[in-house]
Length: 160
Image 1 (spheres, helix red, strand yellow):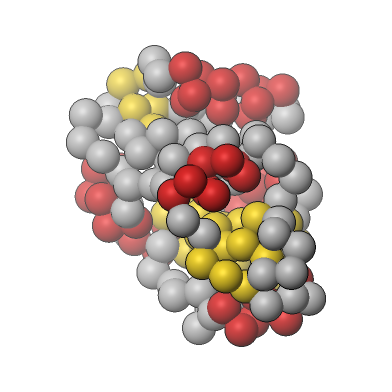
Image 2: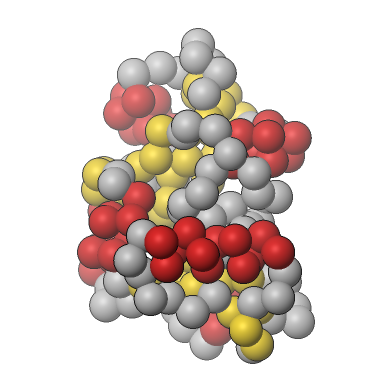
């Protein structure tokens, strides 16, 4: 683990600081693209990883980002009901265009376009969680309360 050097990870660190969050963005030599990879690199439980799952609103075309506990599968039906429209899968190009991040590195903040953001209520059970910081090699730690504050998103039941 080392301090963030990638420009996108450093941008994420600035956004967090600007939001009043004193979180250190760190990078790993190995990818932290999946919840299991991130947990192994960090040394935490998979459930403590705040993974970002991106969907595309079928009617609006808008990105829907669900920040979920790493051990949960996200229910598309629950998310669709919460956002008020059916969902479609988001491919890598859509994810990058809508969020500004590559799959495996989607941070919960700093998206390229306005997104609908939902937080998995199961994340609130932890004292600290880890989220992607803009690249598949960069992460940062924060509390669930800090995640809710910096994103302005509501806690929701999104677990399958």
